[in-house]
Image (cartoon, rainbow, N blue to C red; front, side, top):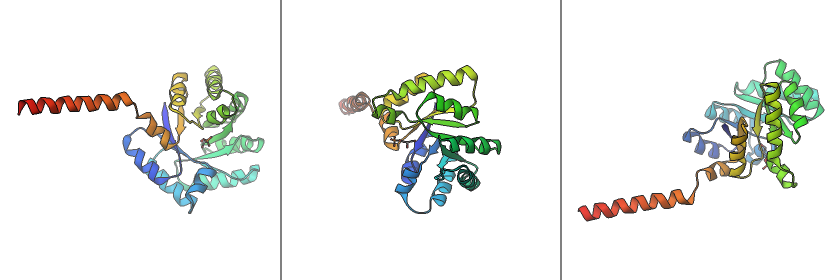
Length: 217
Ligand code: G3P
């Protein structure tokens, strides 16, 4: 399963890239607004660092506006994936952009039916938001399992990109279900490294080694 960082923050991205575990980036208007500055220059720098799929979202809500913004974003860098919201206009824009060879990530997916429609119009990725479903007492991971089943039934090329992940269990369950990608905040990726028994075990190994060296000396 691929791991993307859900962030527009260069420090977070530069900090995690050398680990060799990151396959791409997702951004959204909220994340880029937090960073300030010229978002196009920021996206180009991110693409240069990551050298992998980097989602950048349109903010227009009509088809023509989405197409205009989507084409502008796609022209920034070959790694840009145009993100459109799942609306009637978003689905129509996805169809056109995909037919032009632009990769499209259809976001704000909350039902399997929405994922099916996005796949039918050639989305490269669909982004169901598991955390936001959990927030309203609905299982986000049940949705992932439904979409995995549907995409397997019809051999869609669309990749299932699990978004709005909030805890390591989301990542583990997504991998067990066969999701293609999880996008995670940097803090969540850091959390995947941690286990108290690993820390305690390493401390004990090092202490035992030091003791043995002291006896020999
Ligand atoms: O990729 C979508 C993500 O940014 C939304 O996450 O935590 O705001 O629901 P969250």
